[in-house]
Length: 249
Image (tube, rainbow, N blue to C red):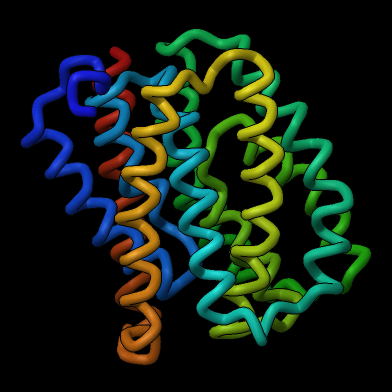
């Protein structure tokens, strides 16, 4: 199977899988962050064009495991309201992404990760309070961004929190909504030939490591200090953005 991975070395993929395990654990604790941590490594390993569909498959598996861990706490009304608008917009965003070249994707990811640092902090500080109608409106923008840039967790998170979801309910509901968007995105990639067999295998491999991390995260959720984690996520966003932009330049 390694020969199908475009010649990447076994050691490179071992490093990616170790990072995926760590990313899955952190993402399972707070509901996001896995894609942000993994994208620079995947871009380095398979290229910007292929990194997005690989992460789409892996993200599907990660969100599936997060939903399963907290299944009883999913708020299905929020999932329905958000997904009603997010799913069609995700398809539009993914179709737009397929038309871009690798360099543009890498630059877009880097700029987006940088922008998420102040925007996420502003949204959290604004003390937002929204209902189901607001979640449906948010789905329009979040859905398109999800299809276009793969990772929208840091911006997505404040809106789900603003509805009043916390801990397991937040993680599971956000994961279920992301799972539906991810399935839509993967379907679009497949229909336009962006998911050849090697890419699918890579996504399944990375996704398996993310799922293991998600299961490990449940026991750790209550032990992580929220303020310290927010600082960690800002640092991860900054590092990921610099790596992606540096590679594109």
